[in-house]
Image (cartoon, protein in one colour):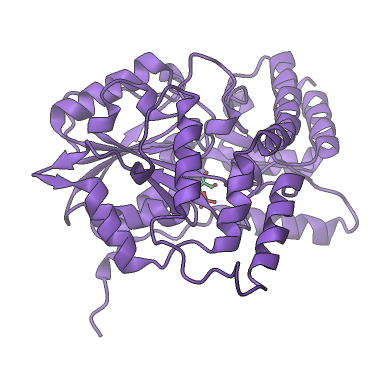
Length: 394
Ligand code: PLP
């Protein structure tokens, strides 16, 4: 056996393991107590009615000879590709159906997409970051440039002329910071990538949470992005598909390097490495884009946004610095009194039974920061916010 020794370079992630160990220990010591879980990255609301109905219909289709579907087209059901292309028109982004690839979710794509690039590439990752970016590139053996972000730039780092990368990850709205790139900042990144010939991997998993008109939902709203960017999107947080699994990836036909079309390369990759997303799931996903589906998913998002408003109000009252919350389901706060991330985690757990996520787990520059997620229940979020104010205003 010849193993990929890059696996040796992966660092153990103790973040969620440590959180679960610490909460378990607390519950053993204080049986019957309730924990206010503000750390979860999973959604808590069920799929909307329009999706459930479509899923049921699709299951029934599979029971009848004349409506049964076997293998689906590897790049996605043509009808769903068309529907997604039409969804982009809302943002004045013109896509052809062939530029849309239906996927089983963003995580899968973020790793698989590295097949498009040669080995030993240099990738730029802005930190704090979604941990999968780093690990997928370690496994691929790529060189990683860690670009730290901080409070001074609102956790929105800008291009550095001294850095040369082949691939640049941008996540906006960001997990974990909730920070968002406006049009002007994103244009700077697009121009920079265009100038140095880099490819931007734009993670738009949280686009549905954007409420400010000045924030692009898609990188293709920025002029020139079709020459240098791939967009990876997920229906997980948009529509509660974390356990149902569906997303989409956009690769413009204009995107070429060394005479090779990345769109055509991805067609070849998908037809080699997948047999498509299941008919049932794609039927359910299509329902999200109907008028009824859009209303229902936004009704759910509104509930998460109320949670965000409640936590932001508490932090405003306390005069604590934070970013995110408005256009994203995450709030990234500075720990008070110069506490470390884990110190603050322990303090909240012991004193008010609130559980969040220590910022350090998303990269070293996250030390001293803390992430709250807004995917919990409204009741728990309200109580957590109240407890936070009570504790920190002492
Ligand atoms: N990208 C970001 C920034 C995320 O936070 C997540 C999930 O938390 C994903 C991608 C993964 O999405 P999916 O559930 O579609 O794999």
